[in-house]
Length: 276
Image (cartoon, rainbow, N blue to C red; front, top):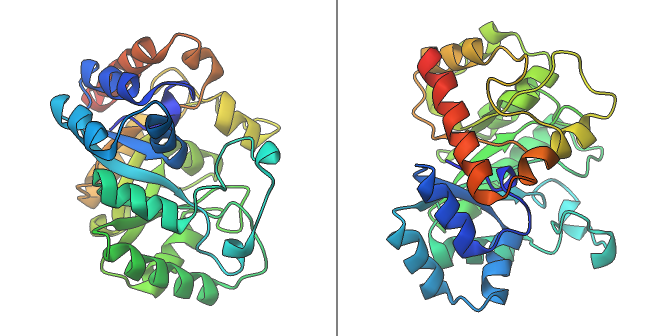
């Protein structure tokens, strides 16, 4: 799966799909802004479904669900300050994309923080899963090291407490490494709870600004110092059947254009997986 952030943000919908297909991917993840961009380019929902079908691609994942935690759905921000073009796409808009294009899953994150308890987060996650199930979606929770759900242990506890049949985890190699996760802890996660995998790389020494690095300076798999062989091996030991994605937010990669970025992402990911 080619994650949305691996390609330049301004990539048109049809070019995004073509780049992914040409590089040999079988699925893509989309942000709300990718879908909105396609509509602004003049494509109807039927057009976009046809573009996906013609290239043999599925929408593997919609990213991200930011509104689900207590109080988050009340958050408002002026468009000029929404630099990621994120917050104008809430639950109604993202579920509409799922219905329009078909999608396998929804990626949930904590981007606003707050004072919620683990119990409150689990209740909110369960409720999100119930609502998402009405649109045929699996939901996977991704931890972010700078958030109130900062690591595997915290995310896993929420998912297990929620006990939603369509709920699980996102294992992102970048966040896994930056949270200093013991791979034994990953090996012990039930495979059926791992619903999405995202590979990327970076230096062992953590950056001074993790959020800045996560959005601009990731490296392709195998081009950094992460123990990706160990991570892939641990994931295989869990028995997970989650789709394998590559997510590399990188200004230098984006500068190469969507087709070259997709080609390099596919080649690097295949090499890491084959080496293991």
